[in-house]
Length: 183
Image (cartoon, rainbow, N blue to C red; front, side, top):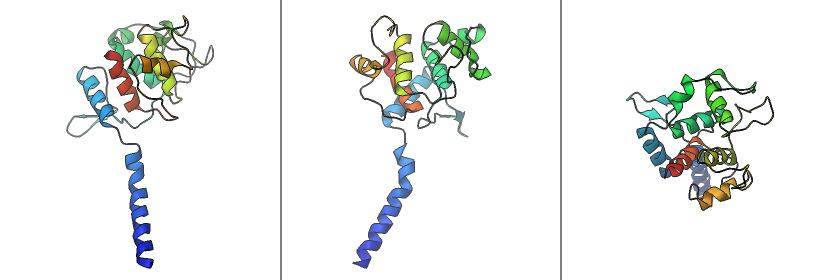
C-alpha cells in the first residue's frame, strides 16, 4: 500500500513538474503558421537564437499595441506605416507603437476604449484580434457584417478560426488567425 502511494506521489510530482512547460507549449499549427508568415516577411520573433533563427514566443500573450504591429505586418504595409505620420489622441501608447496604432486608428482597424485611452499595454483578447483582422479584410462591424460579440463566430464561418477562444490569447493564436486570414 505504501509503495503504491509513493509511486502515485512521484507520478503526480513529475506530472505537475512538466505541466507549466507543456500546458502553454505552442501547437504544431501555431509553429507552422509562424514559420510560414516569417518566411513571407509578415511575422517576426521577439529575439533570435544563437544560430540566428527567430524566437517566436508563441505562448506569450500580446498587448493591444503588439497586436497592431502584427496586423500591419500582415497587411504588408509596415514600411509605409513607419515612413508616415498618423494621428490619434491616445495617451497610453508607447512611442515605438505610435505609428502602428495611429495607422490602425485612422484606417478604422482599431478603436480605443475612450477618446484618449487605447489600452496599449493591456493583453489582447481573441475577440479584439479577430475584430482587427476582420476589419483589415474589409468586413465591418459598423455596417453589420458582424458585431464585436459575434466576431469569433463570424470568423469561424469564414474559416479564419475554427474554435472559440478562452480567456488566454497568445502570439501563437494570432499567428494562426493571421495565416488563415491570408488564405
